Image (cartoon, rainbow, N blue to C red):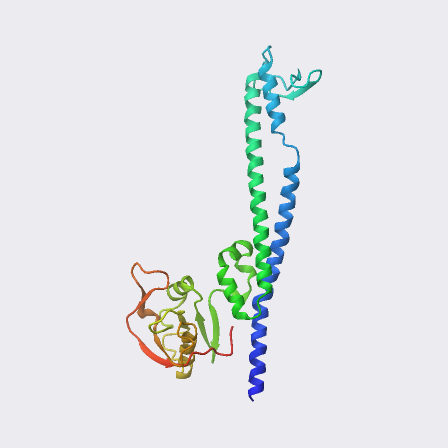
Amino acid sequence: DAAVRVYWRRFLGQNTFQRLHDPLQKALLNAAEQTRFRSQQMAHELAQPSRADRYEKWAHLLIAQGVPIPNGQTEVHLPDLFEPGSSEVIPLDPKKNGMGNAEYYYDKARKTRQSHHYAEDRWLETEALSETISGLIQALAQLKTAQSVEHFQTQHAEVLTKLIGHQHLGQELQPFRRFQIAGYEVWVGRNARENDLLTFKSAQKHDYWLHARGVPGSHVVLRRSSKTQAPPKSVMEKTAAIAAYFSQAKNSSLVPVICTERKFVRKAKKGTPGAVIVEREQVLLVVPALPEHTI
């Protein structure tokens, strides 16, 4: 029944969308909360009075004393030349004399200021990151389909990995699009980098490799448990239809698709990621289409 097929197609599409969208949304919201907390903590610390001025003042007072301060003292009371009528109690390293302690406090003042400047830079970076996450959350909220979420993930892959890591992206956001046809797994690269990874790192030599002929498109791999396993013709044709769909020829009525074993595909010398040379091939002529089941 056509109505039942339409219902199940919509149901599976919505189910896939939620499995893609919801873990990503949750992870981004958690990242936003953690980033806000870090920013607030940094701002609080930056608002505290810096001790660099005090260390520098102690160094000045130690240098300005007319009487040398010998080793062995743990503190010294000195008149405050910057605030007449008051005095300063300056802690000392007993292993150093007055000049040695002064140099120590000058160095400590310098390092404290450097640390403060570094903390300011870190706070500004954290604020910028918070804005980035907020923008990602808003953009994700506008998406309505599984395909749009996959595109979002690919477009922002680098920043998403840094923010939340692969472990938070859920099974559906693992590398490659994945489909199932009559018990066979089909993997599809989503960009040039994934095409390269799929073909030369993840696929086995006896897996079938497919690509729309003569046009840019995704690398597609039909997984086989062994080199003697022969997928039915219908599985090969449906896999070829996927390769046609994920190519620039997806709107054509018929698309020629290369099919060969992975062992006959090699990288093009000095080629860009995903560029290959196919040594043996057969061609299937198919209508671009997607199967009903993703995994």
